[in-house]
Amino acid sequence: MKLTKETARSLLVAVTAGLAGAALNGIFSLFGGTSPGTIIPLFTGLSVAVGVSHYWKTALVQNMGDEFRQVKNHLFLLENGITETQGLVQLADLNQPYPLPFGGSWALTPDAAAILAREIMIRRPNTIVELGSGVSTLMAGRILQQIGSGHLISLDHDPDWAMETRRHIVASGLEDYVEVIDAPLTRQHFNGKDFDWYEIPEKLRQLEHIDMLTVDGPPQTADSAVLSRYPALPAFASKLSSQAIVYIDDARRATEQAMVQQWLKQYPGWKSRMIDTVPGTCLLERQA
Image 1 (cartoon, one colour):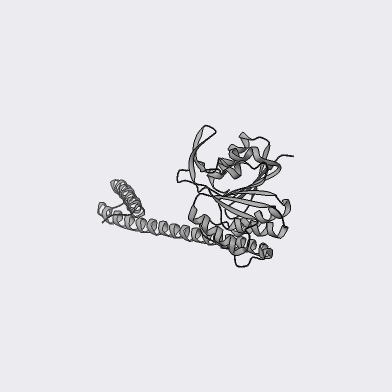
Image 2: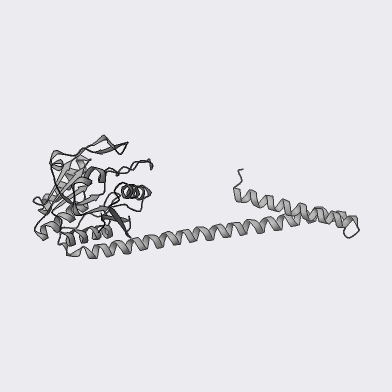
């Protein structure tokens, strides 16, 4: 029978305690303090008592630790749920014809979406370039429609997902404000390294000014050493207007944090601001 680490440790402590007691009893018996016949009973008694005590103490501490981690996890989920609910309340005035499809591993969370909505409403950008289509595409398009100006171009590497986003755009009547362009990932060179990055369409190359760049794609690879979204700023920096802002989703991830730090070193005229949302939101803008 295979012993667990905790059981083996308890047995070791028990045997050690029994041997120590037996040794002390043997020393005392040399001076007539105890009888040699009590060594085995003392060894057995100490071993059992200490072993059982150690085992139950270890099990109790481990159980308390497990319960604490469960409580901590539940509190974390509750906090996230409250935060996302607050985001949904803030987005309630968008007057969508049907509920936005929030949810899923790739979808923008409501609290992060509320930050994006706020920036679009305040800044009223003429041109938005979005990397990765989805909920944010529909929400931004609705805001531009309510403002009555502006245009969003979204790049997506997944043709099926891009088609699904286009279906929602048509259903929401946002065709005049939003377009989703298929942009397959191709091997490209940025700052001395190769990346799988969007194949930029000619229409986007001809743009002179971009007022907002939202970075929510492409997907991060399994290799955390590869900063999959790093090319976003190098690819569009020369086209960003003087008042442009860069919106970065998933900013809690180590890869996005490393990406932002590299950007700030490479483009010293920019500054970053971290906002506490469930996935983490980072805003980049030029220093005053």
